[in-house]
Amino acid sequence: MLECREITKIYGRKKAVDAVSFQIEPGRIYAMLGPNGSGKTTLMKMAAGLVKPNTGGFFYNNEPVGPKSRREIAYMSTEPYFYAWMTAQDVGKYYEDFFEDFSMEQYQKLLQRMELTPDMKTKSLSSGMMAKLKIAVTMARDAKIYMLDEPLNGIDLLARDEIMRSILEASDPDKALIVSSHLVDELEKVVDVAIFVKEGHLAGMYDVEELRIRQGKSVADVYREIYGHGGEQTC
Image 1: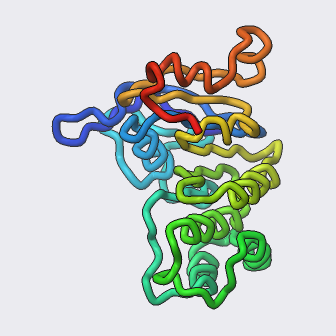
Image 2: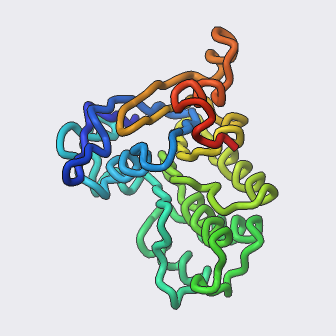
Image 3: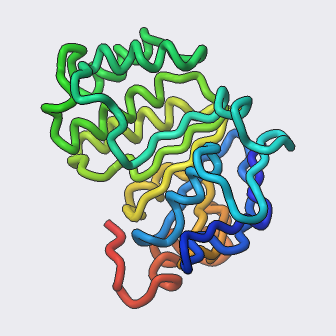
């Protein structure tokens, strides 16, 4: 479905991503894990076709990612990307104009679930409310792949439950979801596969159920092994 082939991205003298390869299959939820600066966001932006790699590439259904794949890949970035004058309703109309698979009806339902109203101005939203707005508008698309970059940042515990429910409801045998985060304990409850990225390298990729059954380990256990002795918070 989505394949990363020996992809490398260099910024100046720094290799943000170094010779990474993996495959994303439909019907599964993936967690892309690692501390800030590990390369998660760069990988997602290249998968979305927003950043070009120096070598290697992402392929969607065996074709290089580009304008065609963007019609079926829904990407939510960490950065705010709405105009200050917009209301939540304007944000929905903006997406409706750009994406044929966007459902205004589904968007309105997600706004209500996230306790947001269509008349709210984006410039007045807190970081947590802005995160919920970005999730609502992204998940209102009927995409084949959803990529959510740090969707739980700035979100309180109760709101995280709603976000996780939205993610689970979007799961489908024909769709794949990729969620990046450093909040391991939250994602472990819902993901099928954990991808660990460390200093631009693929540090490991594990089937979560097999990890539990065959090795008796949790995703949090592996996170601690890879990133060191409590140096990164897992919850």
